[in-house]
Image (cartoon, rainbow, N blue to C red):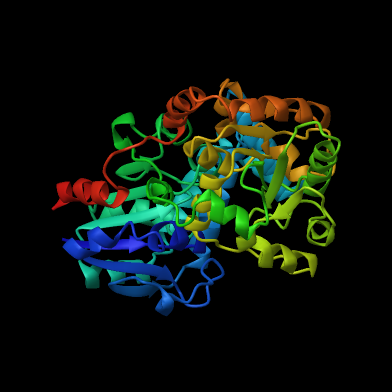
Length: 451
């Protein structure tokens, strides 16, 4: 079987190529990876250095088609739809595009006017054919198209349209937690959508209007590594970070939402110094593109009493202290090692909350709502994919600074509760369904139906 796999972003390279989840598919089929044209801003990785184990091609992106697709989605997103989830998305999107575009797109979204605008947009797209994509399909003659995606980007809409025109099955694989509820920019739907679990299946059906029998719970490709033994044990981890093995270790994992992580760490450090939590130490792990939060350059240079920086992210946070605000793509094995070694986890709105819970670690989501400078956080903490987690008793939530210290005490108590892990496992399965077989093996089995 001939399969084309479309990869359009560094994050997808990390999650689906670096992880090796396509290796079995490549071994049993003729597979060609398709990347955007050389120099495209979404792919900074050197393709030749990747362990693809198969051929690859570049595909030129048609900027005029992309502009039309993007505006069509933006107008649709600002149209009034019932529900708090849609309201939160409208507010977030208005902030992102500015007031002038908001007025313009809101007008285009008025009933009646929107129908004309949509018809006109699709007509313009038809008159602007994607000749390079058409040529690619003629030359490669694929039996199946696969696209790991955040449900937005330079390939998604052209692939949906072209796959239907050419009667080619299109399999889209959800990349991260919020894709179906906040990131999706699809006009139409693929033949199949693989999601993490029950929550994202529900969101896909609600927000993309895809048929329920076309959405499959499939787990998360990038989390497959968590089923393997960590590379180091707790004793080695403690030696690396100069911690005593008997101390209780809190992992404070940063987010990309721009909260004041320096202030959070200072509060916890002072509480430990005052003896509020007993024998406790904190390991700080910055989000790989969060820059240490608002004013994160202060973290590296501060003299902490009970806080150390994750050794695998030390170079990154040092770069932040020097003004180098760049994205990094740490190895998931590094995340696995640290989550296997710590006792509990605290984070302000990051997927690592789920990752910690998947490791059986009690987690605390910190919502510093009073931080007026954390605009990104203010706009995102009410988004739909977080809502279910906030409602579950297994996931602690602190909504201000004073509540944080109280909830940390509860968090530490949970780390000593042997029965709590079982409850946490059941809750996690709602977000990321667990399977005995590997992601790669199950993907091969699924794709064999098209052979």
